[in-house]
Length: 180
Image 1 (cartoon, rainbow, N blue to C red):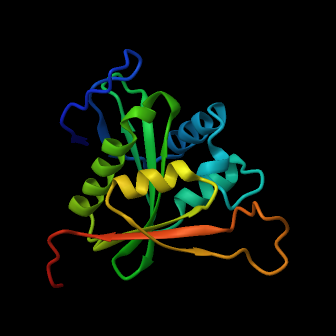
Image 2: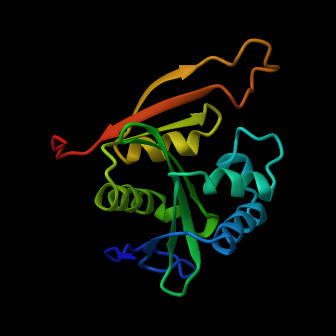
Image 3: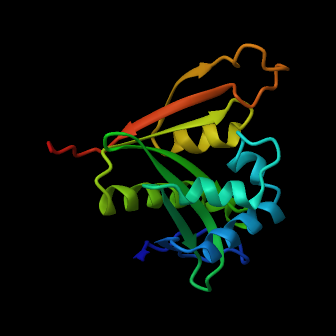
């Protein structure tokens, strides 16, 4: 578990510090999914599924090489979670979900999670993909130093202009890169 510097947020219901740890058991994974469901966040966190179910989530986060991080307040309340999936070589794709009471802490939570991944894994770069309609994710990514590199058109035959497959990608790399 990594202790972060206190992050003042100005809200009594959100703690002023948080901890990061890998979630390695189904009970912890299920608790995060239940929290996303209660807060109506599954459509953002699992945008590729029309109606995400718990077994979809467990399959997604339990696949080989995937790392699920949880940020918690000192009282154990989950504030956010991040899924870091292998992509190519030492590059990981990320998805980051902040729970509603912790929205004011989104940027420091995400930055701390990215630092944790670089410190505790051999990851050399991160990239993300999100629906165009998820402007909160776009703002969070750019606030964390990512660059929006483009938008993908919807696949042929995909109905509607509000397609969740219309997405942007972003990428960033370690500040201090070292040769393998």
